Amino acid sequence: MNSIIVKNKNVAKARKRFWGTVEKFDYMVIQSNVSKGVYIVDKVREYYDSNAEMEWERLNNPYSIVEYKSTLFLIDKYFSNDGSVIDIGSGPGRYSIELLKRGYEVDLLEISQEELNIAKNEIEKLGLKANNYYCRSAIELECFEAESYDNILVMGPMYHLHIKEERQRVLKEVYRILKKDAVAIISYINTWGAIKAAVTEFPLEFDNKNKFKRYMNGDLSFSEEESFTKTYFTTAEKALQEVEEVGFEIVSYAGAEGFLSGISTDIKKLANSNKEIYENFINAAVETCELKQYRDATEHINIVVRK
Image 1 (cartoon, helix red, strand yellow):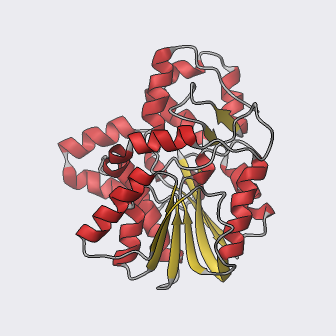
Image 2 (cartoon, helix red, strand yellow):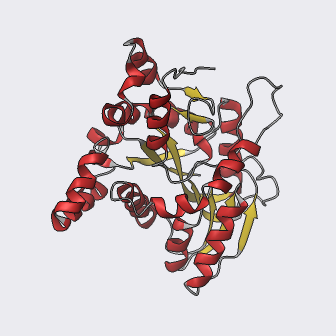
């Protein structure tokens, strides 16, 4: 298992700030010193239960909103016009709310009960109604019937699964419960985008030039001491291959932050200084998020797949 040791506490804090820009860090993690098949979720659940409100507020961030809007852009472009959706890694329900507003029948699945509580409260405040709220991990999908969903959103589980077999277990189950010819969107954290963000967020991480090669190669796992909790991220190429290996057809993929990736500080300054120009940049990044010259080097990649 690859890992990068962060010896400088300031570097560790900086990386935590960076990965705090991810929408949903959910789900089952694998403890490396136990046998395969034994899963430890307590630390991840504890983190999200303790930071549930922060997760709700995060997408109000002037930079994070591009990730949010580009994901909705893909949903509107590729999901069926109606039908059932399960939001796997729903967090506090930001995407579920938008899906409900669009008329979908929505189930939420989330490891953190605190985040599910926020989701239910926010959904009901808007006069909306989700079908079900499941407090469980992404590797616990066996209870769902085959081909039971018209669309599936997977925004978080792949951020934490260190072992490929466990990521594939999630992907295979998503494939199983998705209807034939239906679409899912699956998100990964991208090492190439991390390098860009590191310039301003955690430059001390790259005190050794060999670390650039490791990030460029991808397939990196971090412990909770090295990150805010256990995390996994990889390259777009490796993520696409992993998704295809379970039988999915790749329809498209997008860089969630588009051409704005890695310049969060400047984007926040622009949002404060000129709201109109800021909005122009956000909209342009969203509308071009699938262009190949941007999508391979953003912090998050969203892969659109069909069964």
